[in-house]
Length: 85
Image (cartoon, rainbow, N blue to C red; front, side):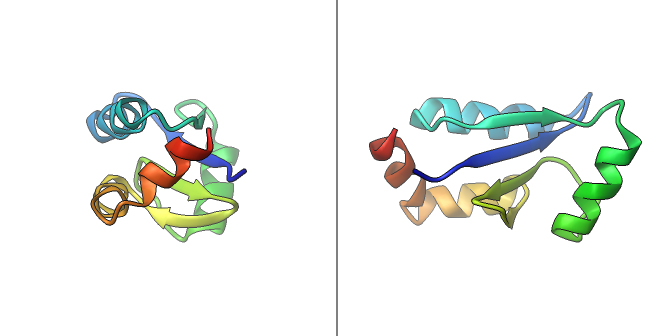
């Protein structure tokens, strides 16, 4: 089963709506809040190449932020994760 990780910070409206979208679709995910973790943020930049939040990582591969997650959903790919849960 695939693992989805959502890297977030506070306050972050896009983080909230990304998590809400995953919850609405019934997709399990792990949240890692980096609001008070500068070392974690630096590691996230190394992993994704991005400094914005949220960052969505599936099986160790970054798909991007909220807009990319919406595109992923529109392509029907989130329903595959919900079915596997």
